[in-house]
Amino acid sequence: MSTRSLIVVIGEDTYNGNRITRLYKHSDGYPTGNLPIIRDAIAKSQAECAADALRWEGKETTEIRQGHLVGNVIGCAVSVYGMGAVIDTYESDEAQYYAPKLKREHLGNQGDLEWIYVIDIKTKSVNIFNGSQTNVIKNKLENPENYCKCLYEEYRADEIKETRDLIKSIQDLGYSVNKKLTIVKKKGA
Figure 1 (tube, rainbow, N blue to C red):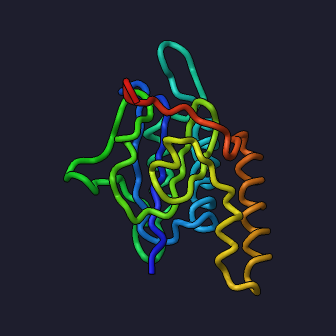
Figure 2: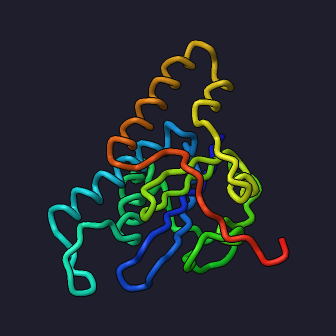
């Protein structure tokens, strides 16, 4: 059985302006499966940017670029089982890149998703949603510890502690977890 999830990365791209990339992860999409990948990708991106400042619009910057973080999410998701996260091509044969702001259609139509993670580089936030794309649109954030309720009692305490530790480690990198995000709604909706 697989826990399907999306990881959506929003931010300024070096050459394409503000950009959104949707990544699909077929297995281990629950919080203790994805939060370590997100944490490691952010930490790796921050370290690489600090070590090699980017020349951007006439000035040096150590800000993470969207494509850079996307690459590190994919890299940090690689395991002995192969690529864990891939740029999503669920609805077409083309990669799912969008600009400039997150909209409902950027989340796809896949009905069997269990978790959606939205990383916004500009606001330095990671938002966690359970299940449907509708929860993202309604900004209905999910406490990632809630998934522990479905686990056998003997595993719950350890999983809750690990989830809390992962959230703290992301916050220690300067990113908030479950901060409200802005979704662009269709006109007349």
